[in-house]
Image (cartoon, rainbow, N blue to C red):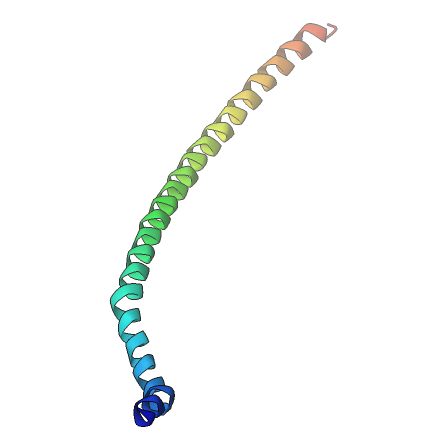
Length: 90
């Protein structure tokens, strides 16, 4: 009985407990961690895709805004010419 207690509470018991914990971790924790990381990877890929779409739409909006400003500038020049023509004293 003393030998069994010495084996369980001594270095052999610590080694057996360590091996048992390593086996449990590889069979239980690693698969859960793998599933969690795969889920996070899918979520991040969706976020990156949505961000890319947002950037592309923003670029299109910016190009349309620049084109509108250019058209507005041309129309303002026409109005200025018309006002100059009206206010000119001949």
